[in-house]
Length: 321
Image (cartoon, rainbow, N blue to C red; front, side, top):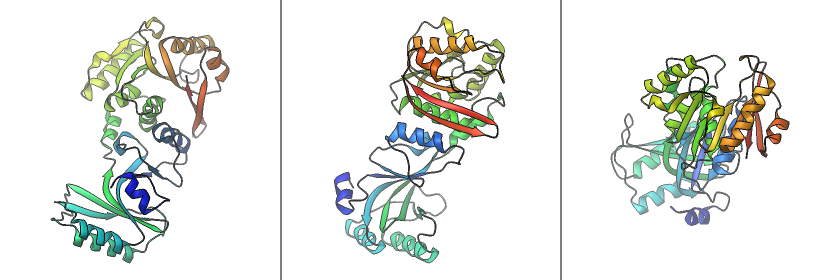
């Protein structure tokens, strides 16, 4: 069903896709920033409607989406439409996806699943379905469509051979790539302080042209081994000083070294930001303290900012152009 058809069914739900968001309280700011970068708006109560078709597996925070086919006042109206249009799927399964706590009783959910499953033409497969369908109730409307889940296959990246306790967490790294690129897959990315390659790996998995630089030869070697272990070309990691980079990139993602973990001076931090300005049009920078004045002095405008706090550790994430 196209957008115009959905809009005619329910003026309050004009979009084609219904996304279900899952993040911890600690991650909420980061999640909101990612959703804003991808969809141009933040989720409300962990749900988001959009006309943008986005694969949930590209985000660490989207649990699943429903490709909306019908929006109706009752399950019976959905059942009648499925019957009238002779909707057909082979090896399908119908799921009730809960969108609001306590919104529908178990008996009503079961009745909806059975009713829809009975009128869909084709053979169901409850254990290994090729197609999953979803029905849910949002406020006073019933929504039906195809269900697309986050496969979470990217979580295997946590099993890379080398990691450090102070490295960017996997979920954060994946979100940073989406934030930095706004899902524009034509952009190229540089991580000039790439450590063991966490951000580089996520950018590769998401299909971006990406390069990594690491000044420490031993850490760069570990990054190369991590990337090769996961099936990518180890040569995209260069052991070298970011200040020697001559190429220009669309986006730089920089987790700036900090004195708590790395022996680095304030001037060296300033130099990293200045070089980032020289080599990239857009910057997403992660710092352990407010460095706005330095970022602005380098010639960047700070477009947005969020925070991630874990225990006594607070990271600031800034989008700059």
